[in-house]
Length: 202
Ligand SMILES: C[S@@+](CC[C@H](N)C(=O)[O-])C[C@H]1O[C@@H](n2cnc3c(N)ncnc32)[C@H](O)[C@@H]1O
Image 1 (tube, rainbow, N blue to C red):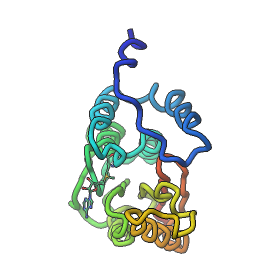
Image 2 (image 1 turned 90 degrees about the vertical axis):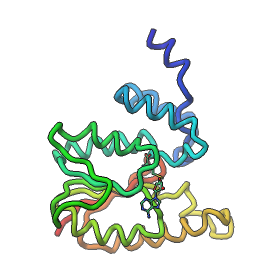
Image 3 (image 1 turned 135 degrees about the vertical axis):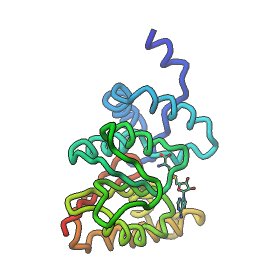
């Protein structure tokens, strides 16, 4: 029965091109992401797949890592910038305890958030970083999506499509600035479209 119903659902999101082949991405999704994806998230992903800008949703493999990080640090209070259809927001809400709180706009004191996720206008990532370095507690996590921007960060600038250039330049600069920021531990993880995990040190 389960196999029957999965055949009728929308196709999984396309690979954002970071893995060696689309088949390898499909393998990752089908082997370790989709079998563990909560039903509510699956339904939202299927609905989002019918949206003309479906590519904007957080990739399920990157979202799975976020859920794990949230549980690892026992995050209760989280904040998100850039919501779209809410795949990452719902994932976060499902990963925190029942008494946890998931905010989409700033409420609360400095150092009061355990986890933050940014998936919005790329040109403002550094501004978000400075704000979140105050809002997120020491030891808390900030995750930034699209830090490989479809792989365009590593190709000659002339080859980047005009519509992508602003995002590419902003992302290259952001990645450099993060690498030079002594206030955070970082890992640029090549899942989804690239997701950089930062842990606030001080
Ligand atoms: C890539 S989508 C987020 C996808 C989301 N993580 C998901 O899984 O559904 C980016 C979103 O950020 C929003 N956005 C863009 N600029 C913003 C800003 N300055 N402040 C808040 N949201 C912004 C866009 O409207 C869009 O909904």
